Image (tube, rainbow, N blue to C red; front, side, top):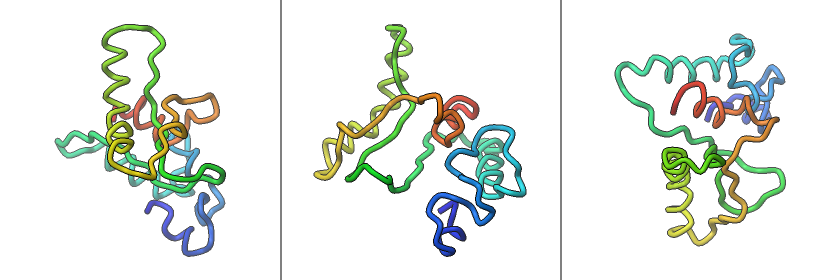
Amino acid sequence: IVVVFSVIAGNYRCSIFGEDLNRRWAEGFVPHKCPQIASVRNLVEHRLGRRVVLFLDLHGHSVKRGVFTFGVASSTSGDVEDKATMMKHKSLPMCLNRILKGFRWESCLHKISKGKESTGRAVFSTDLKV
């Protein structure tokens, strides 16, 4: 858990400094206010010769219920490579949909809207190529 100390303090999304950690993954965050994010980014950026293949951000949702995913893949170009990338990004939720009774495919999102560009899933996909 990246926000473990915040959870202990009763927060579910913010750091102990009051920073919304779900929106601070992009460059420009203040490392001393988000040391958890700085540590995870540093770990991924300096992979020590290993390839990171999955960024999994687990947390509850304030409105949606059940098990679902928020991803990054959306194909608008119709390009074959773009469709292959889209299928790669959707493969985990597709598998979960087949094996988990409580999985809700209809609640899944596979795109990044304007306000979500600094979330971990967006940054790891675009900036860190995970």
